[in-house]
Image 1 (cartoon, rainbow, N blue to C red):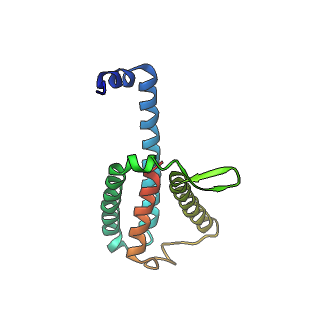
Image 2: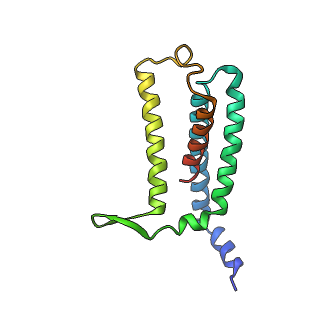
Image 3: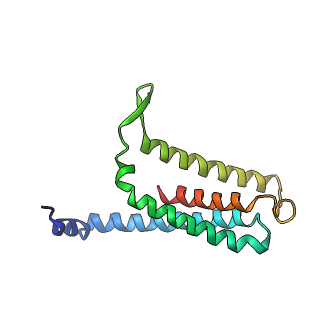
Amino acid sequence: MHDYGQDLTQLLSIPGIISLFTLLVLEIVLGIDNIIFISIIADRLPRTTQQKARRIGLVLALVVRCCLLFSINWITSLIDPLFHIGIYGVSGRGIILFGGGIFLLYKTWKEIMEKVNGVDHEIESKGSDTFRAVVMQIVLIDYSCSHI
């Protein structure tokens, strides 16, 4: 039988509290990043549909996060190598983390290049992104920020 009192004792120890505080700070930072990305993406839609895209995107992202929570044991167990690149084994969990990181890097690079090159979304691209594309990007960004 599992001793949950031992788990609570470990959690309330100094290292446990420091770990919990570190996790809390990381979640806050990732949440702020998430909000910034969602604001930038939703701003590409006409003003009349921005709020609707944010709401639908965040509701779908919440559903994805709930599915992730229910499947977290399975995801964390994907540590056995699926294939090897040289001497390094590539696991399912590694592919998921790598894919999310690449997506975030791509979106960040794209936004930076558009700002550096002077692309003004207010004038040039209002309405150029479809509602569905913006909602899917919101879900993907929320997923990428939540699975780290």
